[in-house]
Amino acid sequence: MKTVLVTGGAGFIGSNFLNLFVPEKKYHFINLDKLTYAGDLNNLEVSDHENYTFIEGDICDVELLSDLFTKYQFHYVVHFAAESHVDNSITNPDAFIKTNITGTFNLLHQAYSLWMESPFQFKKEFENARFLHVSTDEVYGTLEDDNSLFTEETTYAPNSPYSASKASSDMIARSYFHTYGFPVVTTNCSNNYGPHQHDEKLIPTIIRKAIQKQPIPIYGDGKNVRDWLYVDDHCTGIYLALHEGKLGETYNIGGKNERQNIYIASKICEILDQLRPEHAPHKELIEYVTDRPGHDFRYAIDASKIEENLGWIAKETFETGIKKTVKWYLAKYN
Image: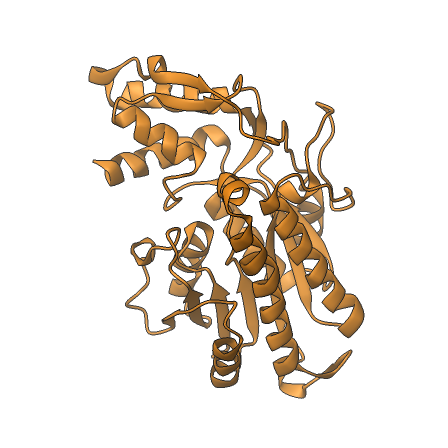
C-alpha cells in the first residue's frame, strides 16, 4: 500500500479530505500537523482506521521531515498546511512567511531528494510520485470588472501578507517543475465553507454570533464578493488533480457561487429563522464594522480547465451547501 503525506490534516480542508478518502483504504495516510490554534484532532473522523497515522510536527522542522520521508517513503504529498487567515497575516505576517514559504520549500526539497536522482531523472520506484500543492485564488488579487474571472493565466497580484506568502509558495513549486522536472500540480481554490471550519472564519462567525444573539460583524458595506466552494467539492477536485492532473499545471477550483458578504449573512439568518423560529428574526443582529486594510473587493474563479480536462464538477450550489453547513454548526454550538 502506497503512503500519502497530508500536511495540515487536522485543519479545515485537510481534515475533510482525510475524512473522505481514508475510508476508501487505497493508501496509508500520514497526517502531519503542528496543531496550532487552527488544527483540531476532533475534526478527524478516521482516527481509528488502520491506514491512518497522525504525527504532530512542523513543516519548518527539516530534520523531522527528513526522518519522515526516509521512514515512510511517501509516493504522494498533499500539501494543505498553511497559515490562512488574512486578518492574522496583517497583525503577524512573520508566521505566514515562515510556514507558507519556508515550510513549502522544505517539503518540495525533501520530496525531490527522495524521488529523484538528479534533475529530470526519477528513481525507478518513484516514477509515478506526485506532489499536490494546495493554494488560493487570493494570489490573483482583486477583480474590478463584474464580468471577469480568475483563470490559470491571470497575473498574480497579491494584496495581503497571506496572499503574498501563498503566491511565493506557488512560484517555488513552479520553479521545482521547470528546474528539476519535479512532479508537482497546483490547485488554486475559491473560498471554502462547510463542516470543521475554524470559528474565526466568516460563515462560522455569522452562525455563532447569531446563535449567541450577538452582533454579526460585516466589513464595510457588505458588498465584497467571493466565490464559495463547498469543502467536499474542493477535496474531490484535489484528489482528482493529484491523480489525473498534468504535471507542472495549475487548476483553479471554484464553485461558481458568487455572493456578496451581506447576502451570506442574510441567507444564514433566513435559514436560522426556519430552524429556530423562536429566535427570529436573526437578521436584526447584522452590524456593519470598519473595513479591514487592503480588503479585496471581488474574487471569482473560472473552473472550466479542471471541468473540461479532468471531468470535475461542483455538486453543491451555495444554497444547498449552506443549509448543510448551518445544521452542522447548530449541532456543534448547541
